[in-house]
Amino acid sequence: MTPSLVLQEWLVEGATLTERMEAALEAGFDGLEVRDARPERLPELREALAAGGVIPTSVPATDGFIGDFDPSRRARATQQLRRELEGLAELGGRAVIAPAAWGMWTNRLPPFDPPPRTPEEDRELLVEQVAALGEHARSLGVRLLLEPLNRYEDHMLNTVAAACDVVAAAASDGARVLADTYHMNIEEDDICAALSAGAPWLGGVHLSDSNRYQPGEGHVDFAAVLAKLRETGFEGMLSVECRLRGEARDAIPRCGSFLRTLLAEWI
Image 1: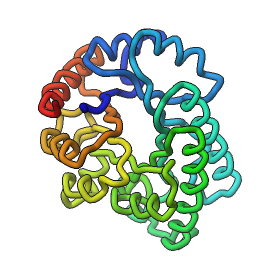
Image 2: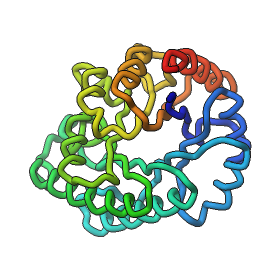
Image 3: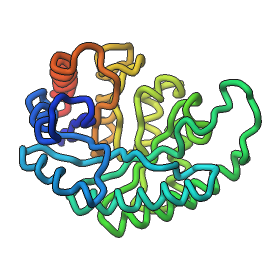
């Protein structure tokens, strides 16, 4: 079965979420990945769903990250993710996406000071966080998707293999990995090999080209990526997360047509 193909809500033009859903459907997508699925937003999300699309995943803007150095910010992020999981479950969605951190620390840019935690302490903390959030997700019938980022954005998790290691150690069926082709283009020796090796833990894929523009505008081989996912029996979500080259009214339909042509081989 062909996986659902969605794109993030802020990429589509429209004064309301319903209008953006309608624009996504018209461009060849199955629905939207939303920024916020907490319970207080459910009326707006349900109204958008009435347009006929799906809202399978969310990428919440949390106050902190699950790998934050600051315990209070880490606690706030964890609580916000719990509420996001609850809202998405009530909506009938499938997964909430979260990185270990973003923009918090990098070992790859000056001043090259050592981080406050060792790599072993980072991993221990993430395993604990993912295990707890994964169990909360499992109890709700949804999943937490842990996303590795490139070395310039996060020092903790940079490869699909590293994220799979944490999820495997967390040992919760409510936790899986989200792979992003933009970050993979920087970090992986072979994108398709990484997807194949990570297949047992893979719950979703963000599609973004090598230059962070929409698929089809760079040099990522999306035909090979989608063929590999099909080969591994991938059943997660495919979501376009990117900047847009060109106006949204032109770029989004072009992207939708490009990906639909490749996905036609899935059937």
